[in-house]
Length: 294
Image 1 (cartoon, rainbow, N blue to C red):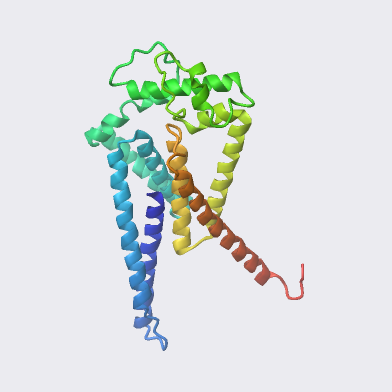
Image 2 (cartoon, rainbow, N blue to C red):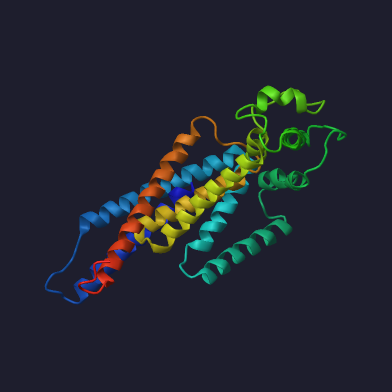
């Protein structure tokens, strides 16, 4: 969804720019009137298509009733709002306004009940504690289940801080670290950071963090220098990475071949980064004094 939003914003901006350029050229009665109905129509069709896809994905996100997905989407939209304008203070003002509106709606009880109810117990997930003595009921089952798996992963990390229990071994060794009331391993710790730490130790967690820092740095670099649709792609990718990072606090999304989708988006980022480097090299070459062969 963030990728569709970023690309859609860029395409609508391109349509607006084309229309403005055509009207300006006609008003100036230029000898070479640049009227391009086909490219403008193609851009408009693409913008409408991407907008519809974004709407469908937003509806699917809502109907998932996944708190992790909703929190990831909110984090992604805030990050995209911050970096949408090239001037950071404008973006900061924008997201500050959005946060204020959200707080006012929440305090006034104007949020839809389905959303308010799902977020009512999110605070319990932030309070990471020993849940062995907690009484389980229908209201807190999902939260306590996650905390119990986080606690099992923390136990694995405490026992093997440098090597972990082995890659993909969370489920096989879960029995040794599980809490009494939670015999099912569920395949992962429902927190990718704890899961990586439990399986690969602190060095593996550090390597995972360095990987994503590098991806964020490359994305922000592309966002700073790219224009038009390419900048929209970079903005959408930033939203994807933020969504993924936030959602991974409560789940593991590397399932059902999602890693192939992520790999494809990293490929798009590589193209944006490569074109940025080529553009920078060309600019430096054009600025170099004639006869300077360095």
